[in-house]
Every structure is written in structure tokens, then in C-alpha cells.
Image (cartoon, rainbow, N blue to C red; front, side, top):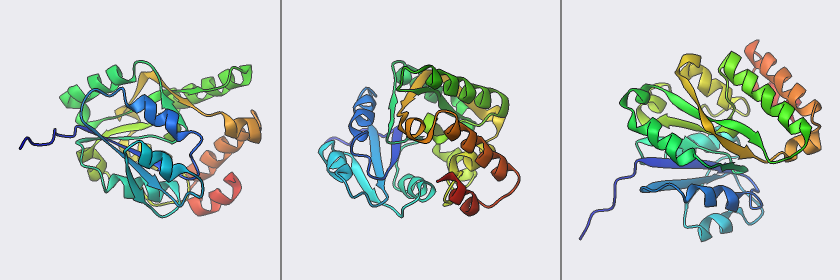
Length: 230
């Protein structure tokens, strides 16, 4: 009886009523040529999210609602040496397999982490402005957000304590513990749904996000910032 192939990459996707976006996200992940493990950490979806995940043959983990808790609980079920955290409304674009493969193959990168170039699925000029703002934030502050994905070796993830189960800013908290100099930004893009910008306002939403980041950097508890974030 042959042994199962070793898992080199585990992928964790936190979901909450994500049935509309999840199929495209999962379809892009099928390009990974080696053995992988995909875990959907669901926070109590009331739509067809679980059915979509089940039909795709991925593992479903029932998690406490809240992205930080879902990421932490999903990571606890992984077996791969590398873990890729990805939002359900994000679709990895051409070149991601090569970028991830090259990063994983470099032994020195076990003490580093990587995120993808940020892109929005909207042709509006406002979307390009948001993308430039995110590029500035990553370049200047070294702070990619969760919608850019995060690739990290299991040993480093455990060493820094993993995702904290906080209601907001779990991604900022994580990359700050990794360190600005230890974050690599891939050339390939993570194409993310622009729904929250279209509904929340192309100027209002980024401004609110930056204000929330400012409050967090000033030491305001995430549970308080969450009330403003909406």
C-alpha cells in the first residue's frame, strides 16, 4: 500500500457567507502542482458556503466567528510545512504558482513570510488609486493586509505565536510580529473583490481603514476599533 504524498503546502481560507466568491478562489488553487491541503475555516455561514467547499473536496473546520479566530483554528488543523492564508473573495492570478514555489524552495525563506501584490476586480480608475495606496503602505510601512494572502513556514508561524484571536487587525498584528524586513511581496497578484469599496465608498472605505490602522498603532484595543470599522 503506497503512502500518501507529503503535504508541502496547506491553505487556510476563513469563510462567512462566501458562497458567491469561494468557487473562483478554490479554482485558482487547483493550479498548485504538488500535494496540498485546503482548509475552509467557516464561522457559521448561513448560505451555501459549506456545500461549495464540500463539493470541491476541501476540509471544513467549524470555527468561532471572527477572522482571527477562524485563521487560528484553521491553522491548528494544517499538516503542511508551509501555510498559505487566503481570503475567500481573493483569486490568485497568473504566476502565483511559480512565485510560491520559488519562495518555498529557498531554505533561507523559512524565517521570512510573503504576500501577493494587491489588485481589485474593478476597471474603475478609483480601483487603481486604491491599489497604489496599498502598494505605498506595503512599501513604506511593510504592512500587507490579509486580502493579499500570507505565506509562512510552520516553524516561523509557531515561533511568533500564530494569529491572535482578536476581532480586528489580526493581519496587521501578525505582520508586525514577523517584521517589515522579513516580508516579501510577490510580483503575482491576489485579485480581490471590490464589493466593499463599491458599497462603502472609494474614498470613504480606504480613509476609514487608514484611520483604524492609526488607532491600532496608537494602542487602542481592537475590540473598540471594530465598532468603528463596521
